[in-house]
Image (cartoon, rainbow over all chains, first blue to last red; front, side, top):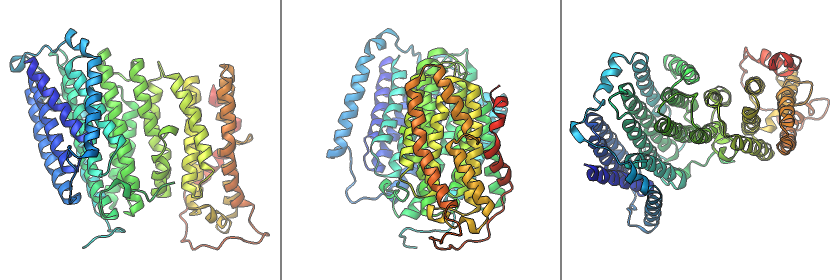
Amino acid sequence: MMYLIFLFSVCFVLGVLGVAANPAPFFGAVALVFGALGCCGVLVGLGGSYIGIVLLLIYLGGMLVVVAYSVALAAEPYPEAWVNHSVLMHVLGYVLLVLLVGWCFMELFVESGVDAAGFFSLRGDFSGVVLLFSMGGWLLLLSGWGLLLALFVVLELTRGRARGGLRVP
Amino acid sequence: MTVVHFTTAGTFMLSITGLALHRTHLVSALLCIEGMMLALFSALAVSYQTPIHTNTSLQPIIMLALAACGAGAGLSLLVASTRTHASDHLHNLSLLKC
Amino acid sequence: MSPLIWSLLITSLATSTIITMSSHHWLLAWVGLELNTLSILPVIIKSHHPRATEAATKYFLIQAAAAALILLASTLNAWQTGHWSIMHTSAHTTTIITLAILLKLGIAPMHGWYPEVLQGSTMNTALIISTWQKLAPLTLLYLINNNPPTNILLLMGVISALAGGWIGLNQTQTRKIMAFSSIAHMGWLIITLNLSLHLTTTTMMIYMITTTAMFMSLNTTTTKTMTDMGMAWTQSPPLTTMMMITLMSLGGLPPLTGFTPKWLILNNLCHMNLLFPTIILAMASLPSLFFYIRLAYFTTLTTPPNTTNTHHKWRFKPPLIAGLTPATSLAALLLPLMPMMIS
């Protein structure tokens, strides 16, 4: 289990590294999905199966929207993937940075590894939503208020008279 | 510092470095913010990993809800700035330079 | 904008700041900050002008990144110490959180977004950003004050006071001048976190009063640039005089309100034997004073019987703001209350 979690962690780091290395946006979105898969794997490996699946569903939905936006808006004739020269430099730099920092903490890894029991361990992650709805009280109200507010914020940000810019109607 | 802690903190640092250093598209900047939120979610989710402190297990859910609000606002800002600036390149946002 | 949505946004803007200020848990503070950012965005972008859109985008990117950094540092703190209370933050994470809050406040090495956001929004929104939006981050700084990173606060404060005065010399737009004046004042303010928290509160209140008075005067006379100020006297001659006095108060000249925090801060720094920062701060207030006095010169000293040297500009009937009179009088006359303020 320990090796599996390590593998998923590497997948997570590599995914976010692919986003941070500034490729074309839809490659970035694909890399972020890869990272979300890795993050979900880590969480499931640690026993939080419910929270991992919530994360995966929400991120897949969100990233679908982002991919659609970026394909619609930032369509370049020659999109830069990770093997292009400028992006490759950043990828190599970030990989070196991660390896260096990881090497500095390497002895700590051995000292205190993750005690992972996988699916069978007793974790509290199912109780999160239950707690939010049963004893959350003001927190539930606050989250709902935030979502309602986000609805109106999006409405107000995107509508309005179109001023400036060059557009074909 | 275990593998998981290193991973979450490291991914956050990678994302914020990517946001700070070089961005050409606004979508990429928003993706970096999403990466930061992903790292924060996993950080919050691994920090409650004891059956004793179940009270902290609602933290990732709340964080995910508000991160979704932030992502929605970011995408609508993308739409608004594309309407007014004709593309989503960040170097177009230079009307207010000192 | 529909009045219902407007009232929802304003309510949320007020509530989220109060949530952050009254929270005891880092996640709740983060929720307040995030709601605050969300609810100010439509207020900034209200005109849907390209400049407004750009200002809202920049504001969102900076605030979201800084809030996420605050939450990461508090999670690190929870990993180390095991509790989420704002009051008990360990020293290392306090440093990270302080840097993130200084980014949210627009302190000098991280100040690049601040004048641009103020320039892109309307005068009233600029007033909200430079006063009300400062409250929540400053409260967090106030709350984590049990082991503050003193060197960083002192260094950033001095740099901020210097940069605010120095870059502000070059500006001609009143909102950018006010932004750099705000950066300089924030530099003075975060230095007081090292000295005493009563002093921080006093400085914050006086900063808010003087800045509000100045923005309200600028809004009443619809003054966008420095050449517009030359025709402010046609609107209201007494307001012109009060504007000059408010500018002097912002600069910190003695018989006015703005002198109080400067006096007390320099006094406290001298008592702590920090003579070098004291000298730099006192010197750094001079460029600020220069551009305030330049504004006052354009406003007041070019009035008749001199010949007019600016075009008369078209303006609509100005709004009569109710808070203008108390704000300007408070900005001028609060110095005698100083012994009450510090005790």
